[in-house]
Image (cartoon, rainbow, N blue to C red; front, side, top):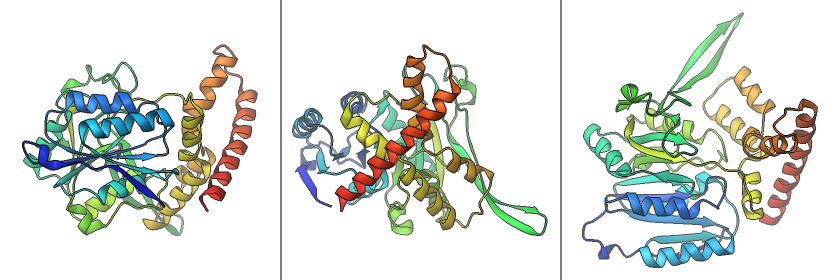
Length: 342
């Protein structure tokens, strides 16, 4: 894989030495690159390093990133082909030298004091991993996507056999931030999303790099389970608020990456690898995930398009046909990408 270092940060120009490196990775599209990056520089007063990995963004955004890297003096790396999120994060991790790294996706919009609060929590609690309060959609910072979560293994007995299962639960999903203020306080949790996560860099000496066989699913669970296994502590700090801004891909460049990023093939490989790695038995939840491969594509792209065509009405036979055709098209694009990658 060819990697271009288009700009390299000069840390000596900082008045104080940063203790955290932001590693920005693409999530599912490129078109929110500018608002996200601008929010980081607008609302972050703490000195920081920044490593931006650009994986084949369109020409106008490529130029924007190159100009921003020159102006803001951050490190810009570029690959000419699409790679998975964990590959991107590991690429950035290899260039980081600070005590902490912060993984953040390119469609995250931050709020004032977000990074300071995460770092304060990490230093006060000696946490290995700290997650902000993750919100979703617009208006910004109003609807909760996740406020930490619970995860644990358990053994289910039935008939003559025992089955190893995984229990997980997200806290306060789809609740209003303003209505949940009394429940939003700093607390230990079991897992959080890699889309915005502060991590003590030394933990990677114990657990190794992020698992690149997890292409688009379960990578956050795998990472947090590995941290816990190594004796690390995970916290959620709701005083730090960020928002994931999902949007239907509107450009061909966005669509190509979006279709691969959430492809059936990548998801199936990730699910099977995670199941084997943690010695989990096949259960109903696992089978449902396989039955609904591509749900992210369908929820963000396909079904909203159908709603427009049917003026808001739900036509089930049309949905089934559209999903069948879309899955065929997704497989075609994935196979084409694999041929080109070789």
